[in-house]
Amino acid sequence: LDYVKFEAGNTVMISGGNNMGRVGIIQHRERHPGSFEIVHVKDAVGHIFATRLQNVFVIGKGNKPWISLPKGNGIKLSIVEDRNKKMSK
Image (tube, rainbow, N blue to C red):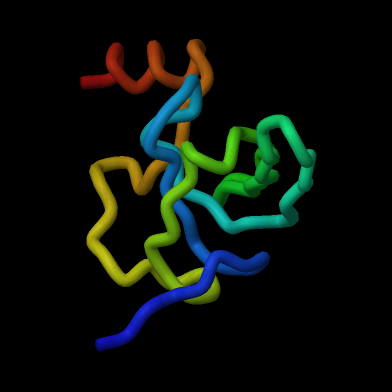
């Protein structure tokens, strides 16, 4: 049985909040005693976003996920990019 620690540099998937479904690599973790801890994540495109600790789920060591990723590899498209992708079909 193998496991992955919650530490900077590991691959994570966001399981709640506005960033749900996004995949990225942990940059760093802000500790706030008595309040929500914040995790900063960088996705494959280079966008950095922050979310609460309880919304983050580790799925791989380094930049290699141990599970198969959903369609789009967890990359969130902008409104314009999403529209252009749908219109090209």
